[in-house]
Length: 277
Ligand SMILES: [Zn+2]
Image: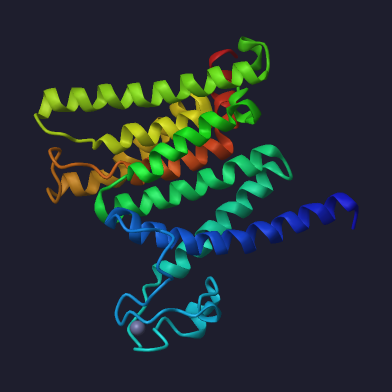
C-alpha cells in the first residue's frame, strides 16, 4: 500500500466514524431545533421516561442495535430514525471524502451535507426549514467562499479562481437562489392565492447558492423539480393532495443540493457540451 492509499484509507475511516458521531448530534438538532430547545443542554434523554442516556449507550448506530431499538430503562421503542440518520451522515461524509479526497472542498462540504440532512428531516416532520440552520449555513458559505474551489465552475468566463471571483460567485449564487424562490413564491400567491413556499425555502437556497454558486443553484432546482414532480404526481392524480397545500419543497431541495455539490460540475460540463457540440 502506498502512502497515498494509506492517507485515503484513513480519510475514509475518519469520515465514517466522525460522520456517525456528528449524525448523532444531527438527531438532537432535528428533534430540538423545531421545538426551539437548546441543542447543547440537557444531555440526551429517553423521550418516553426521561432517563439520561449514559455515553456507553449513546454510541452511534451500534447502541440502537445492541439495545434492539428499546430504551434500557423503560423499554420504550426508540425510532429507527436515530441510527438511520447517524448512518446516513456517515455515508454522505464517506461519499464526499471519496469524491474530493483529502482537499479543502471535502472539509467545506461536510457541514453542508449535514445541514441538508437536518433540513430534510425538519421539513419532513414539521414543514419547517429553521432559521437556526439556514442563516448560519448561508453565513458559513459566504465566509469560506475565498477557499471554496466549487465556486470556480466556469474559470474561462471569470478568469479562474481568485478569492475575489469566488466571493462574487458565492454572492451571485446566494442571490440567484433567493431570487428564483422569491419570484416562485410571488407567482404562486398570484395564481393560487396561497403561500406555497415558506420563507425557509428562500433562506435555504441562500446557503446552497453560497456553497455551490450559480451552476449549483441551477442544477439543484432542476433536479429538485424533476424529483418533486415525479414524487408529487401520484398524490396529485389520486386527489390526495391539491396544488393549494404548502409543499415540503425542502425535502426535494436537500437531496438535490447534495447531488449538485457532489456532481454539479460534471452535470454542467455535460450539459454545456450538448449545447456547443
Ligand atoms: Zn425510557
